[in-house]
Image 1: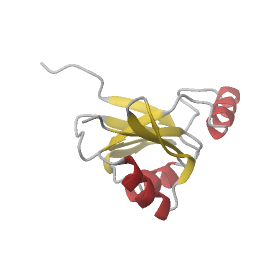
Image 2: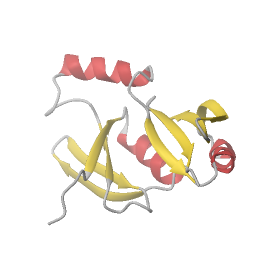
Image 3: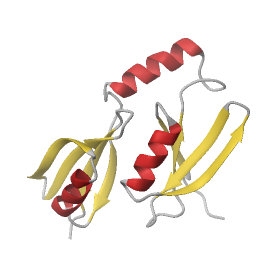
Length: 135
């Protein structure tokens, strides 16, 4: 039996906006998109990692009450959540492609720790590190 982490959730302000960003600009593909009343379970996956899903969720019921959901939205919008990491073969080339597609970068590519990394944000404010794989 295979065990492990299958889905990691990410709070977004608008699921359609997030879906367009992750599929259109980062190259992810939809895994699951189903609704249950006002709740929508939306996950995407990187084409090179089909066993892992990134959940794009709206903070609110049934998980969070209204006041907590508002606080979470404010924290996400400020970019205060820990960054996620996307590895690439060539950070500078990926940076150029993504910049041309309108991705908001918070840090240009920098050589450090024996590799190259850059920082960007999704439309909701979630921070990402774009890190070049080590040889």
